[in-house]
Image (cartoon, rainbow, N blue to C red):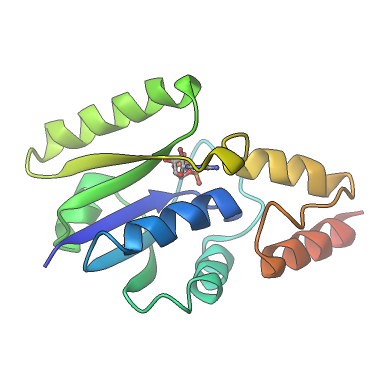
Length: 161
Ligand code: ADP
C-alpha cells in the first residue's frame, strides 16, 4: 500500500493544487493532503477553514484524505506511515525552495522520497498569492479556483472592506 502526503499552505487551494491532487490520487493507494502551519506566512484562512475547504473540494475522490499538521513535515510523514511526499513545480523559481525542502526531509528520514509533479501548463502561473491579490481588488477568480473558494474569497474580502 503506497501512501503519499501532499503538504502545503493551501491558503486557499487553487485549480493548480487541485490538478496535482487529481493526478496524484491516481498514482497512489492513498493521498493525504495536509495543511501545514507555516510560521513565516500570515494566512488569510485559518487551518480549520483550509482543511474544511480541502475536504469539500476533494469529496469526489475516495482515496484522498485531508488533514493538518503542526510539526516537522518529515515527522508528520512518519506518523502517518507514508512513503512519499508530493510537491508541485511550476517554474525554475520554485526549484530552490523545493530542493532545500527535499534535502531537509532526506536528512531527517532517508526512507522518505520527495516526488515532483509538473504543473499543468494551464496553471503554471497560478499561485494562492496571485489569487488573493486578484480577489482582494474584487477581480474575477472564477477560472482559477473551485467555485466554493471563489465564494469564500468574495465573502472574506467583502467583510474586510
Ligand atoms: P507551500 O507554502 O508549502 O509552498 P503552497 O500551498 O503554496 O504551499 O503549495 C503547495 C505545493 O503545491 C508546492 O509544492 C507548490 O509548488 C505546489 N503548487 C502550487 N501552485 C501550483 C500550481 N499552479 N501548479 C502546480 N503545483 C503548484
